[in-house]
Amino acid sequence: MQGSEAQAATQAGSARIKSGVYHQTGAFVGMTVSQVRERFGSRWKIADDAKALKGKEELAEDYVIQANDEVTFLKVQGEKGI
Amino acid sequence: MGEPRRFVVVGAGGTGGWLLEGLVRIAEFKMPGSAILIVDGDSYEPKNAERQSFTGLGNKAIMKMSELQPIYGRTFITADPRWIVEEANVELDDMTSDVVAAKTLLQEEDIVYAMVDNFAARKALFDAAREFDNIDVFTGGNDDQLYGSTYHYCRADGEDVTEHPGEWHKEFVTPPDKNPGDMSCAERARIEGSTQVIATNMAVAAFLLGRTHKVIIEGQKDLEAEIVFDLGEALAQPYDRVPQMEEELVGSSTH
Image (cartoon, rainbow over all chains, first blue to last red; front, side, top):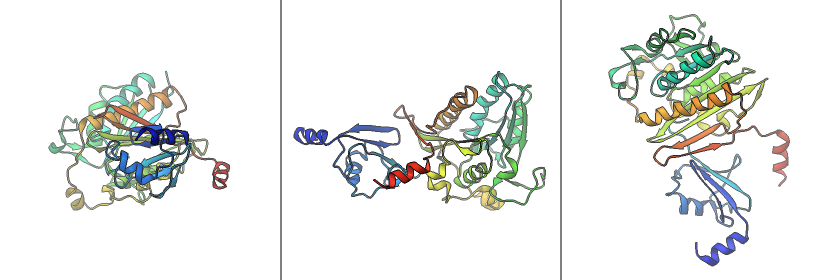
């Protein structure tokens, strides 16, 4: 993220993103779910079929993340998983 | 010393076998006089040797009981060589059947470990647990290579302390797979070998034993009932699975 872009995002508040073993609280406010998926999907191993949830509410890909949101990407477990 | 309890381990294979090695020691030395019921309709075969430890061929539940009982004399270890299913018109002591319903097998105050490798059997156990006032059901699995997960569903005094896993994972509501207990012998024989990793299976067992130690032996309350881990990244993350109160849900809907 560029410096001015990061500064603007920080001023907008922070949100928390969780995916499997990964989690980060940061300047995600204003990003859409699809943007988070695109930017962090590989690093955080966000599965293609993982749903984006706020609590138990499933979020659309164009949902814009708000301040204090906690968004979790929950993958469908494989047959050997829980 | 803790009070004796009844532990039910469903599945004595890739993860259940390792769990039992730790659990029997917990029962023997921390909760003497406890009982362990091992349930598994499957048989140990040479192809299982890479991930499972048995001293001979035969039904896994019976073999594991035979191995452990002579060593751990203060623990009452029994075996049930049947497959767990959701529905079956079979009496608890009818050993002529190769299946038994989860709700027939389980009892109040049981500590259950669903160490099966399919969601259909897990669903049978977790759904049956809903009918009890006080029960703990643990499960876990090797999801993908070095990635695994565990879950603990707890009910006390007729209420969910932690949520049924179906609240978060739809695989527990509409399983994508079939329970071997509901298959014919021919179908079971065609089940392909697993892609599990022994390190991950042992880690699943360790995480479950750790949670058993924390909430059962030490009596600590812990609402972070789901744990995911990645051995390759040396990371683990707990997830809060506390039931939402109805008034909280109503309140949230007004925002």
